[in-house]
Length: 306
Image 1 (cartoon, rainbow, N blue to C red):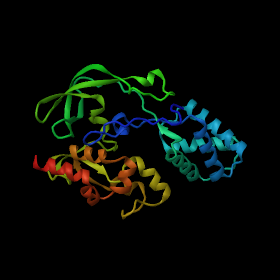
Image 2 (image 1 turned 120 degrees about the vertical axis):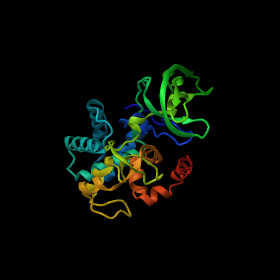
Image 3 (image 1 turned 30 degrees about the vertical axis):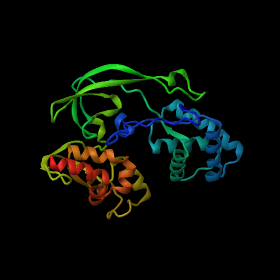
Image 4 (image 1 turned 60 degrees about the vertical axis):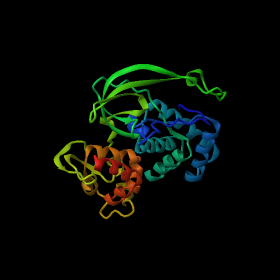
């Protein structure tokens, strides 16, 4: 339980094509937000969804907080749902289908009770291949880390909330000197504008399929298989026995594993920067939808003329 009521995690990578925090750091762990309001909301959802009385709901809230803290359950909806189910059974509530608990976890996220926790990231090694924000066009391009620059102390605003700790009042922002490989152009950037290229594409099939024509930019280059429904979301659709709107097929592992398109590395990376895996599955699960997205059209207008 890391954060408190009324505090929000700051956004990162807001310039140009933003680097989603989840993809920049890998999948972030979740935590329960501390505070009476969050606990009350959690208990209210338990009474509403599971029919728990006030005493049982309060017991589940306290027991579940201890369970997720002690067991380090990460950020899997399946694991969090199973842990909540086990906690409810231990506290004397009747068993319910697993989907009930998955939905409860999703509701807790929507209400800000289950939150992402930013974890410290070790510095990138010199020579690491990255995507970095080029100041001339405000877009991310492939680069190589040339040096790690001494951390810059970021001063806090003049007025700070009373509840903030001294550790939260100052932050160190690491900086990197990178070399953009296409133009041999050096540039110094804050770390939130530099992304390890190996963790940007959160799509388990990261092996090149050899030379081919990218279905987005129509360039000949090494191509990669992009799952139009990201693999991280497959379990959800298999359990629900349905697919995102407009997708024709069966909600089976075979179909989901083979439903995709071949893209070059820059285009594949850019698609994953447009939205989270859930957003890609729900709104960009067809090639036509990807090509019609405004952020993709801007990217392609630049890439095709190159």
